[in-house]
Amino acid sequence: MNKKIVAELELAFKDIEVNTPQDTRVEICAREEQILTVLGFLANKGYDHLALISCVDWIEEEEFELVYIITPYLQENKAYIEKGDVFLKTRIARENPEARTAIPIFANAEPYEREIHELFGVKFSGHPRLTHLLLERDYEIPPFRKDFDTRKYVKDVFDSIPVIPEEEE
Amino acid sequence: MDRKAIKKWLKDPEKMGNKYSLWAVYFCTGCGIIEVPPVITSRWDAERFGVIPVATPRQANLFLITGYVSVKTLRAIIRTYEQMREPKYTVGFGSCPINGGMYWDSYNTIKHLDKYIPIDGWIAGCMPRPEAVFIAVTHLWTLIDKGMANAYKKYRKQYKYYRRNQEMALGKLEWPPLYPISKDE
Image (cartoon, rainbow over all chains, first blue to last red):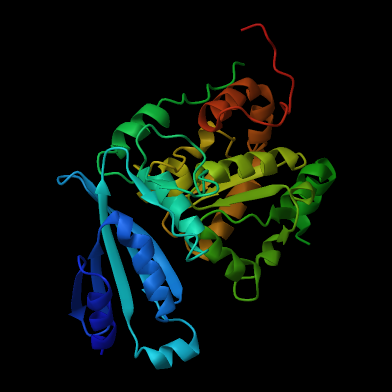
């Protein structure tokens, strides 16, 4: 199914790992500095739609894993590459995490990167506005990290707000 | 009209008028709003009970808070509540506004809504059936009859505590206080 794109990827990039865990899925593990090149390569090959950027917190390995899911979207590209998605994975350090923005290649990466910045604290260099997307509060530890203690947070913040006293007669 | 009710009408027409024409603000918080369209349309027909949803809070006097309240929604709820005309009645719908429900340990969901705005009554359940809305409405009638549905008066009297709690949850509020706050404490 995807032998063509796998062969092309292996030809173009020497030091990336390409697997096909399913018929309709290609999984690429690359280093962080290669991400933009690989994304640009795939975009030229017809994978023209960035479906999602996701983030995984590997707390024991002290790493974040960014997952870019890209897929052919336009009809002419669907005919050209049979079908299937590409999962492009990269690992970055958990301490002061920083990655390059994918906006130059996929403009719709902007909200995904803002969300990851908000929930995991990953900084995307080159992003035009890394502000809050969904949340209002500022958290000491971004709330989707594994070491964020939700129960302690609720106890400290919401449970500490006092009950309204009854009216004095 | 029920003949027995004529006496009540003559005795306190304002109360009876409030009771049988509740205008609910069509405000959607969380998942509970999915129960409201069947409630107000032909299947259950809330108009039998005098409940009609209206578009803006300035025309409404019943506020159904349907479902979980995130921090951002709380801001909108307070602004909506303060715009409603008196007498105004609030009903918390579902278990999430009561104590957080299944979001009891969430980092961004308000637990205990009655710390921020006054609530006249609660409908427990996740989700409550549409019939529960009518049970709540009839209970609200009883409360209005007895003069016990006075959460809006509590809001007026205890406003400084409500405002303090709102500021604790939301940070600095960008609108001025609804009622004057005495500076003596």
